[in-house]
Length: 259
Ligand code: CO8
Image (cartoon, rainbow, N blue to C red; front, side, top):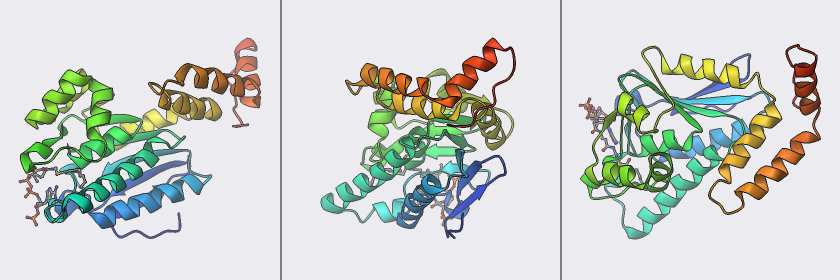
């Protein structure tokens, strides 16, 4: 990755795992305009970089993943600019959700407001045991505006989503796991656990992983079953399918080419 960012750190390791770190630790990695613009650019760069096979998103420092949108910037919004900024953030987070490489949020600390919304835009979430999640926007006279009302409802159901949004209360990692907001809680490093999970995922057929993400994305769209059948059929024409089934029948490990 040649691009230099001021508010992000982006590294790709030899196995193709890209780690994107929101890097404003003195402001608990709050998402200001610059972070959002750089995140947008970084996701475009990642999409174009064939060496990147999977992505971990995390926050710098020990205290926070991301403590939300930058409240100083938020405070000067009016109805027109507010809607615009909300839409901008939604579009960037949707771009993350639409990536067809696996994306894991490694939540090392506070994931509040826009930070919780960013974590929810990732395909999976792994939380350090001391991490805390919450959508406290109502305490600022706002509602979540980066997709939180929609993604939290999808993840935890309508009743629990409304409870968390209307009270604004924080949930610790254990409770977040119990309600389905996170996939795994760890007493170790969330980044290491995320990389370990990605390493397992990356051993599967890459085209199958891509189509699995695409099919799940269609859930609830009204075209989910149709898309699943199409994406399933598409995979039946791949070398990876021949290799995966052949390896099973020959009692050996598959060696996928991604073709
Ligand atoms: N925005 C700006 N600065 C922040 C933010 C934030 N969200 N969070 C923390 N900071 C800053 C603090 O101001 C402080 O800066 P400084 O040292 O210059 O005073 C520094 O980070 C350290 O923070 P604290 O001293 O507050 O650290 P504590 O350990 O005492 O507290 C908390 C940690 C509990 C996380 C506390 O910082 C906090 O409550 N932060 C705000 C959390 C919050 O309300 N987040 C939601 C923001 S709203 C939002 O995300 C809306 C998203 C949708 C937007 C839609 C489009 C416009």
